[in-house]
Length: 411
Ligand SMILES: [Zn+2]
Image (cartoon, rainbow, N blue to C red; front, side, top):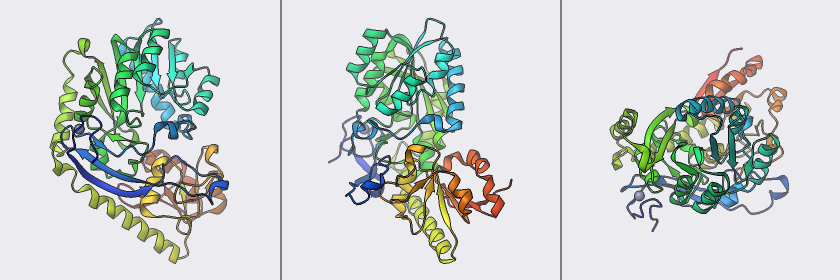
């Protein structure tokens, strides 16, 4: 029996079962193609006591993140997002020249380098050895570590308490949500602030973003369940912002319980929105599975018919979430000859499970395919512009989610 990792309840209801898939960041080198590849059940359930949606923690973050393939700086929109965030945070928290900022899961330093540029002292905590090394080379002090209560206390003892602790795009990635939250509390000053960005389950459900469910994302938050999670570490939610990132995210502003005070009106507004969407009862979750099945049927039908017409389809992007989609739909190189990615780490490697080759982006212009299937569909505006060159040979873009759409682009 699976128990809720936040509240311990065994009242877990099925939301969607996506079958068995490999960890989505385990891109295969060519010499591993003849080796067995483990696959794990990917089954989303929701706790009907605290409403935290979660998958079983079958892989450990240590397996995923010791050598991580994702470098935030490869995405133009992320770098800009980080710059704006730092400017806003400096204003909200009132960070002066003596302030100290810690970012957990600081990746390649894409965010903290804006803090460094402002002359504010900072420290990144990043578990991936290779990604953290890139950050240090860029002048961002970075510790190779997973956050735990003990690690948080050790950083506080050595560097002092942080006026601001940032944890963006990591709160879903840690199976020990209680220990991680206690680690955040250990890092932050008693009158400090914690800022967390995490995907919003409300938009995941409403916009059918099922490909953002994967083994590296252990839990999926509403604001209601995030309040419960923060409380497990002695933090209180004081404000929330709705962001368009990852198809819909929440930015949680939390403070230690003792100094939190009354939450902003926006917190009550978002809680009301979640309630209206039925996410505080089972009814809000029950339709999801049928909508997921439809994406699979529509995409497969399109790919099979294109193949039968003798038209070529290649992929654009090899994001982790692309692998949930490819594996769930069962798409292999007979239907999608290859995909391309801007990250050179992935070139010459193969997508996990489906074993689709990953090539440099220039391959698309060389081959002039009839269709380009965009796997990071959430960057639709950015990529429609970036890929407008497919217009030169009459190619079209295909976005699989929220529902299949085939788009003619103009130069
Ligand atoms: Zn629970």
